[in-house]
Amino acid sequence: MTHPDFLWRNPEPRPAYDVVIVGGGGHGLATAYYLARNHGITNVAVLEKGWLAGGNMARNTTVIRSNYLWDESAAIYEHSLKLWEGLSDELDYDLQFSQRGVLNLAHNLGDVREGRRRVNANRLNGVDAEWLDADEVKKFCPVINVSERARYPVMGATLQRRGGIAKHDHVAWALARKADAYGVDLIQGCEVTGFEITDGRAVAVRTSKGRIAAGKIALASAGHTSVLAAEAGIRLPLQSHPLQALVSELLEPVLDCVVMSNAVHVYVSQAHKGELVMGAGIDPYNSYGQRGAFHVIEAQMAAALELFPIFSRVRVLRTWAGIVDVSPDASPIVGRTPVEGLYINAGWGTGGFKATPGSGWVYAHTIAHGEPHPLAEPFALDRFTTGALIDEHGAAAVAH
Amino acid sequence: MMLIECPHCGPRDENEFRYGGQAGVSYRPEDTSDEEWAGYVFLRDNPKGWFHERWFHVHGCRTWFSVERHTLTHEIRKAP
Image (cartoon, rainbow over all chains, first blue to last red; front, side, top):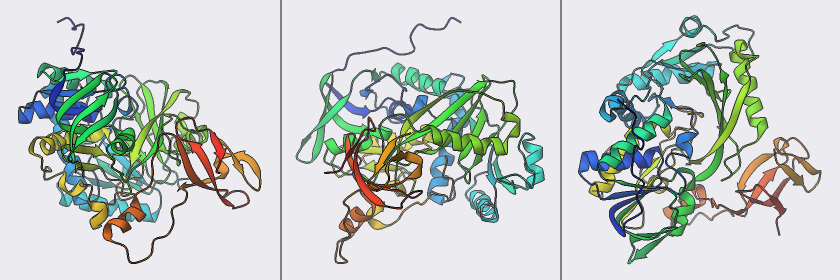
């Protein structure tokens, strides 16, 4: 079989659509795909100001897991993980989804208690989870330094064997190809600059390619959601920060699982191609600059080398940053907004990639029915007024 | 790394400072509605452009101060 020249058309926008999705990243593409597949809604445009999946979808560290502490989070991320498990076959595209196991290391007694609690919470929610002591961690991942004299001693770890990684570009291309095949218009180089709101209802978007009328408008714009929402007069509890990541030069296979450490803010896996992929915590200040400070990378590397002395002579190939929108409780905001016909899917912060299919699934349902999907309901915008927060700060992970 | 001008110590490296978020958020009295309280606790501006914000010279003179910083270019100018 020869590879096709193009996986999707590159159409100009039509004057009107039933649904306009703002943002052609992973979540926007997944939403378009499930709108067509699950709800038969195909008169849909995905508007992307740059090129498809060129924002955070191209910049994340591809970790997939569902071992979140709270019931609401476990439910939506586990739904997503179950979708991942069938997605390569369904999309007829090798997503290089590899369930190689995700370790979350514990470095002190607080971490140990938190980790064991999370294992129990996960099991009660039907999420696979195990507790490993330091010896078992060493057996599962021999290159970790578990010496008692280490700066960050490893006292144990949680393990989710069904967690792992996938090839982010393939995920975007596969979703785009299928959405396009359903008739969805994927429109690149089309920036949304404002909304037309009549009697409290959003009826059209203003774009760099002109006005486009829409039955419903769905934001899937990650770090730029606040800027767009402001155009519709909505103030959101989101702050945009740079999140940096890096890759090493290509290495022989040396690390066959994902290792995360909340306490020292580092997460590491080895991509199929051979590079070590590492991510850090956010740069602390608000920014849309898609770059961060080198001292953040330096601190992250210092921690990584304490955990993996074997990497001491590995060279960094490149570093970059994406803009992540962080909510006050580190949980996403999915659902309706005060403007009728305008929907929001944002606040996935540092951990949106793993949620790609699950997010698309519940967001498509929410848009199609005008009512939140049951899994999305707890993540409504009004939780910041009612106080029903889903506080995953530190509970599941600082780093995602 | 940004160079941030502390009003007491002059220009110093970014990693001597701690970020304090949006400046000018005043405390609310107790007789507010749930919506006003949620706004006070959770809502902060998040502009793409100039942002009036707080910094704390935690590893220096420990002065809190405000600057205006551009969130796209990271350019800093003194707050008016």
